[in-house]
Length: 392
Image (tube, rainbow, N blue to C red):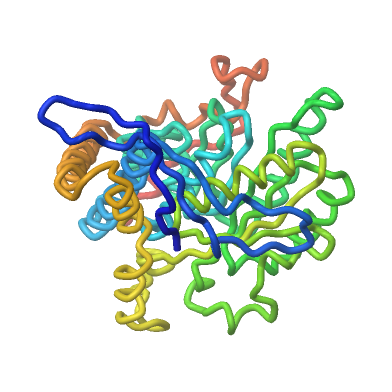
């Protein structure tokens, strides 16, 4: 865990307000373990009040959005698969803070919050989950397949581990398109501990190392592969050491500042042509594997409650800001209230949309010239026969 190390003397004076520190340096000792590396992330990180407030706003928006998804699913407004991310918010937020939009990002089916971090809005995420045409992928992706090309987000993948070879391809493209000697945009593929032993990941890692690709293999270790604990589903549970010749780093995935500083180090290493790196984020999910999993048959409620009370990423960030003099409990509570209201307004906005029409069936499938503006309807595409679909 972090401890406040010192607060600089930069202050801002406001009318009828106490002077507030604008920058602080935090101790990261114990946040990282490395493998086959001659260097490591710094044991301190400096952050401003505005940075931490922005991180908190994004993380709390993620939390409220996922809780809303839970409620809407139970109300049957969301159907099908739905994998929630609450508890893991510091991972996506920290990665997003360390990378730039030029870096490529692909992840698993637990992708709502990454889509939000990578340029999406709450209304677009919920709209997609509702199956409405104003969703982030126009109702063609659903919960597991968000996508945002403009922000180099290549989506979630419904098949366990399938995103990793695609991520290696993105890393290959980034290297191929970068002039020799320049820093390369990196590619990151996030996957869970349950996917870590997939054969396609080993193949991707081998190619990434052979070709020195700027590839980050990021294992979000939330302690359970579906309903199986890590000590029961993997003979090697130190995931950051799984790359054989590939160096690795393990970081505290419940601390936004540890993730941000750690990923800054990883990006710099990979971007300079040193090859790939394995990253293990030690984190935890509060919900079950999906909405069909109560999450309490293979772990008890005390374990979940204990994690919430001792390691919750939002509570930790709140305490960090209060200890640094960046904010106080009253201000943060007001901010939470405002975000809850904003999320509910976004849900209302999403519900004003509607399912796509039959005319949208062919869009984004074939193109006459490779552009999305010139969709081409193929004559051999069989349309639905509604008469035969009616059950007497």
